[in-house]
Length: 325
Image (cartoon, rainbow, N blue to C red; front, side, top):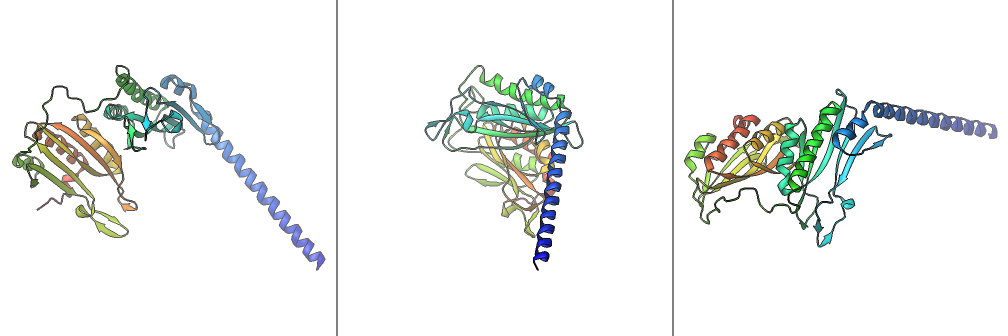
């Protein structure tokens, strides 16, 4: 029995030794792969193009540039927040699966920087994947814009630099972020709303819902969640609400788009000076995955409607409409 027990113990020891060797070999191979990825990145070029000195994570094969937004004092819940506590802009580069490189990043922005920075990102080949807040009771309000892209190091690092330069150009002349959208000299909105629904109904090809001089349009987007069909009234919808007067109006609303439609629809609206104010998801496990982005625009009601119609057409939304009766 003692001999048998000794053999069993020896077998266990041998098995553990083999497993440790396999695990160690695996770690070495992973380290080799990441080191190979890191070697493929032209990190000096990334530094040159972004104007920042990055840091390599050899283990992950990622080269990351970052800088703190210390140019504006930010107070959160009455406390002056050091940039170290979550006010760092960054962009991380790694080897792409089908391209020279891939980049992902997060950009700390103030309200008057968001739409210029987003336009710079989209115009230079980057995708914008989220726009949201990280804090409550922050003064001035801080937003975070997430980006990603695939291509050459020159393309990606150059695009990131364009985004950063855009924010620097805005903050350079004025360290204090603006407290409203641009439009010096524009007329104030009237207390009583009087939007004429007819021209907007014609532009969108559907009947809007009218209330107290305001007009709202809602377009459903069929999807499934947990095997259940969901649509307009379950919250999968694009909507646009108009207030003010025909010549001096505001529009706000939300777009529900697929992941593939997000970038072209953002580009369409930004081109027409519609401000994007949030990009996020509302659900989990939906099919197809739906992204939502919220917007705000000022101008003549018909001009705003035509700008939105362009976004509807780009996203194919009018083809799946389920308008209010």
